[in-house]
Length: 159
Length: 201
Image (cartoon, rainbow over all chains, first blue to last red; front, side, top):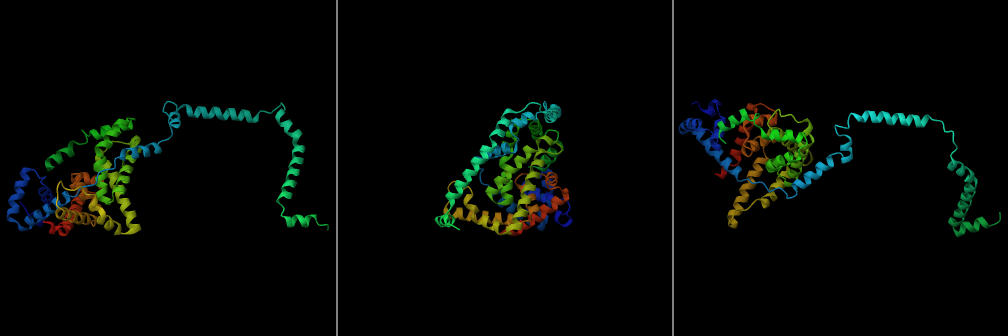
């Protein structure tokens, strides 16, 4: 076979061979070449060192609550259950119909003239002057309470 | 894994990709199938991400984001590629983005810091002498630094090739490049590692 390093032909075989992944037929072809090619022999030797070194690199274990945290995130990302029920495929065709009905009802309510007098409203109107008077008294009292002694003396001094 | 097995798997993988079948069930609302996929791949995805970013809490967060995205995109899932290709494409995308942002913020120094306190988290041998353990930790630190020093795409290619045992075509699909580009990435990466780790023979 041609030298994989010199010709760049099948050079991935060198990687696969160093990893022990090359099938027997190709491996024996490459082995025959490597025996006579110092460059390929050095490549395989050095690549095996890298492969073994990488193989020693272990990863830390996952946290015990990995799944719990993930499912929490999934729950947070999902719409709430009532919305899900509302948006269920069975209900979806009814959503525009319901919206239309709601609009019609709202339109009817807003445009119907109110013939009856609201007793609560009339009651409010009847007590309004008294409330205003009481509020003014309260404000006056608050103003007097918030005055400092100096201000009080000034305000009580004759002009 | 022997090359012929990989090639054979590549040819028939789509037809018998039971993971894609599980994902289709997830699409139909089967939560148990999602739990199965999570159980099957969470460790390998988290380890891949750990070796990419070399920071365990970040790797776990990114791994969670990977599975969250899998779950969120279940309704639009179409089995056009192997499930693992899709899964690692998401993972690689997230890792490369994180590395880019991290480099923009703090440059390369964070990786060095992580590498310095990292060996403490390594699993110890059964009954190693203190000296043996120290030598091992120094070696592991060198491996981590050597991998961290690789350009991001080269690193991703090496990790998928070495630890996930992916073939060139699958790595190419994950990285969205050609097979020949993957071979070039791998050769350049391993060349750098051979130089940096030659003394470990």
